[in-house]
Structures are given as structure tokens and as C-alpha cells.
Image (tube, rainbow, N blue to C red; front, side, top):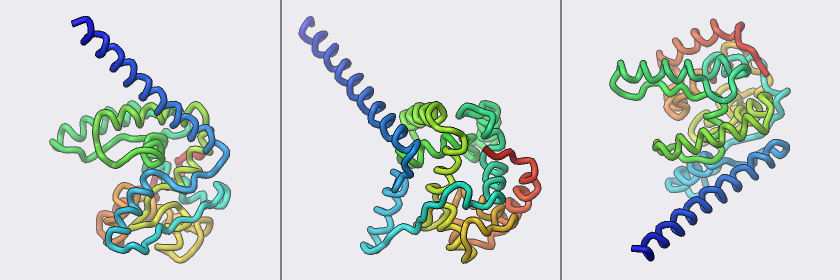
Length: 231
């Protein structure tokens, strides 16, 4: 029994050591990306692998653009649609999470997530789409790292450049060119609102660009955009 107890003790210490080493590795990348633009993300790697199963030559469409070269209309549209309290919260919108839980309970299934822009970015940078309690816990830890080390402007700049916007399409510049044939800085309010409406299900809307639901979402986002506060 004593020997078993020692093995359990060392096993537990080993697991804790691995966990701490993993957090330190993540912290290092978050610290580096405070100044250096990410070339790729975990989510991009997953999508590229999926595309290359069907076409080994497939590549992602993405092009980094600085914050100031992205249309303010798109910035307002994303804030209005994804995280109205972005500039005020510290990574988590507790009211939004509560409302999402209540909505999901009413429907009997997950129809709303309540994730903030910071949480979405944490997931995109490092994690997989697989839903689990461990992934949500890791997402929360990374979110705290981002909010502690980066400014809100930096979080939003990276978010706008790395989120998925279609089948193999990532970031505002690639999305603007893919859907409208223009740069991210030239987007009109209507175009920006439509792109923002696509964010929760981008690959579906890439295939169904005139879906009635998207038109309704676009109109709602347009109405909310004037009140959106930007970092």
C-alpha cells in the first residue's frame, strides 16, 4: 500500500508538472504574439488538413492587414453582433453567458454560446472545435492570459485577422476579397454587417450567401452598429 501510495503521489506530481509546462508553453506564445503577428492558428491547421484530404494542393486564403486598414464598419458590425460589451469586460460576459444558458434550456439544445471575442480568439489560436469541459477550462485560462497581456485593440486586431469566414477563408482581408472583390478597408456598412452575420456559421453561409436568415441578421446588425464601442 505504501508503494502504491508513492506511485500515486509521483503520478499526480507528474500530471501537475505536465499541466504547468503546457500552460507555460501557451503563455510564451501569447507573450510573443503581443508584438508578432501569428502566421497560423490551431484552427487554421485543422481546416487545412480537412481541405487537403480532398485536395492535397489546397491552401488557405488569408492575408494579414493592420488594424487601421480594416473598415470601421466591419469593426462596429463584429462588436454589435458578437460582443457588445467587449471594451468593458475582462474576458467574460457573465450576463451573456447566463442568457445563453437560459436560452439553451428553453430550446433543449445548444443554440447560443455566450462566448466573448476574447474567448473565441483563445479557442481559435490554440484549441480544437471539440466540445468538452477540459477545452472550456483551457479556453478560460488562455482568455485570462490574453486579457492580462494584450490591449483590447490587439485582441481585436488579431481576432479580425484569424477568424474563419468561409471554406478555407480566414481573416477580414481574405473575406472581403472572397465575397465582394474589395479590400477590408473598403467595406460598406451593409457589406460589413453581412460578413459579421456569417461569423457563427461561415462555411454554411459561404455555400448559401442569400439565405433568408442571413438577410435578417444583417438588418439587425446594421441597426445595432451605431452604438458599438470600438477599442
